[in-house]
Length: 227
Image (tube, rainbow, N blue to C red; front, side, top):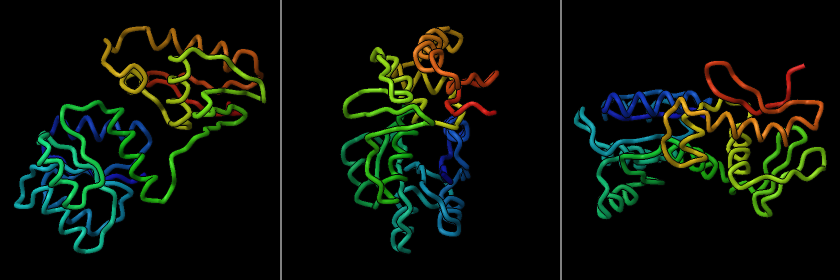
């Protein structure tokens, strides 16, 4: 996806832009409302991550209202420290599609942005995931490979689901900690390596082709093995 991030806080912007790029997306960044409005109105994006309070004479609400008045229907996720109910309502009434308050977990932001993009394309939520001969049914909570059922523990299921939702993309340890464990560990902990090793024993070891790959100095990737 092509995503525009309009955020003036350098630390937040750097964190979000880096994470979205690591997830395989193309990202443009504007650090003020005027530049953000120009980019949003002149280029095509699949989603916009928009702060409420922005310098440049154009705040987040005004930026979005201007886009909607131009019939620009790009999905917009507000990302703001303005967390009151009235603040969220104003953002949604201005044309926002979703509202996430700071502080936030990157995994949640990523899931919301990707969800908005699917919704914008008229796609419903996926109930089945598949990579090569590996199949996951999210409703029955079952996993099969080459037609054979694989029994997974709840954490193993969540870990595999996250990898399958990001198949073909490098998934960093930070993304896994936030997306699968829902909180922050010391990034040097080996908890992820232990769980990935156990998952490989069930998903890869009994089969001739490996799907879970280690990307050196980066993380992991789920994809069919390159010949």
